[in-house]
Image (cartoon, rainbow, N blue to C red; front, side, top):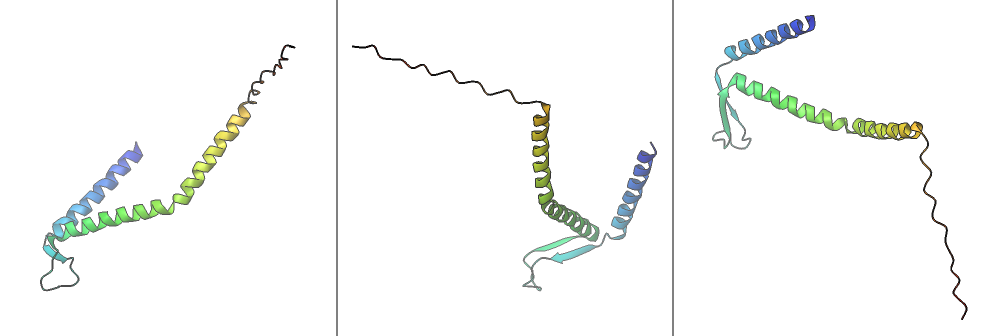
Length: 114
């Protein structure tokens, strides 16, 4: 119960900080994404400053999450191999495998004498 209250208070604090940041940075800024022509850029974005900053924070979190996920590839593959080995060893410990079925004996037939 206390954990939920603390989480709610922290989320309320973060929301209050974000709203106050957005209110304080309402001025419109122009972001040019054309590095070659500063006088007449081809791609211009005019948005309030807080939207630009929030978009960059979200994009940074996504890129960082993807990078962390890619770096953990080795650990995920090792975990999959270890799980497969555990399953194999548990199956081995569960009991001996039933013996393979015996092949039927070969019956040789002697052709009748002529």
